[in-house]
Length: 309
Image (spheres, one colour):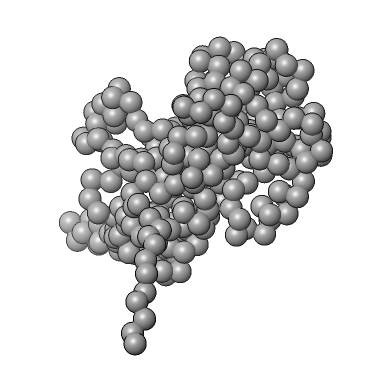
């Protein structure tokens, strides 16, 4: 009996020793993250990378006890990541459908929350030497369907938000033409267009619209933002480039939203980062990147100062 008890105590001691060693080597932590502390993994649509990089940079400087580990990938891959336990937030160009929300509710016990953070646009870009920089919507439809001889360059094959948006909004579900080619990512689209005159590129405005970004300003010496026909303007023959003003006043015809989708049933770091992007500092970062903030309306008001005698 005593021998059996000694043997049991020995096994228990060994198990406790290895458990302690595992904890020291970075095993599962008991601590949970909070809105201002901890680590979280998120997945972001690659077409939003420049502005989200800036959001994370400012957030980390403001909350040094937080760590946001981000993966940039196509929209469909972000949605797949949301199904995994390791990813609690994604940033993409659409919300969840009722069916998708119900599926998550059945597995999680609650529905993920989602809302629009800002409005972006799909920018049409051409080479500086290109003869064509003004397009009607029919022109874009002819290019994307293959009726035009111009080569159209996308930021991926069939899983990106840009591809989905153009197929839905311009082609109305029709297939792309054989002249539509896929590049590695948005940065590669800009590079290809900068080196080829007979190419039309399609990228998120976040990659070419930031007037404060030196790299983007250097790129704009090689490429141009094309003018696209305004389909909702009373004035016929009005063409617009993507900008805060033309997106806000529905003059640019290719706007799209940026959504957050968050699966947290309690206030964690995901909630903290979402609040940061929704409030003044985060919304100002979107504004500075020439996107349209969706949560706060920043108006420029004129005023007069009356000088005292």
